[in-house]
Length: 204
Image (cartoon, rainbow, N blue to C red):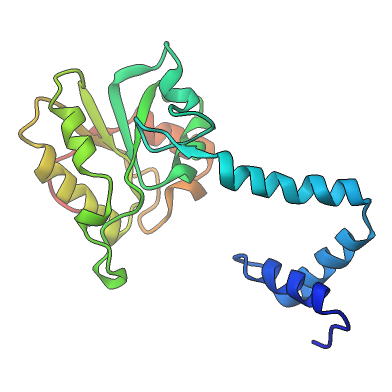
């Protein structure tokens, strides 16, 4: 791709580094931005700079937040005795869109995947165990993807949590095996939460 400006070329390279954005799409977006008003472009770029500098990780659950605690953890009507364990923040967004869950969350920050070099020590697991041992938690829902890695992580969590005085449950298999949670439609995900079942300590 022959780009006659090193500044445009650099902008294209940066946009093309984003997932799912090819060089042609990046060039089209850059040329569009080039035509926009200076203040609009400045506002556009500042939004990303502010996001990077200001967005935090919730100290309680690991969700994204503008402050030390996220809006869910700060909400006084949420049931803190019920914790839904998810892989990442996209799963929180998917579950929240169903309006069927009233507890709080715990973000692992990934799932166990030996192929990718991700082990239990790389995940936010110990703080979940600590919460389970406080005596304030009644139920922990394992809401991980219905994949081999998700089931492996579920089983590991079950072994870590089985001595705590909590009910351990998992989503019903309304979410198709092999699928990722945040791609499930709202109705299916809602039913999977409402019809959750006790986790029996076996993967799959």
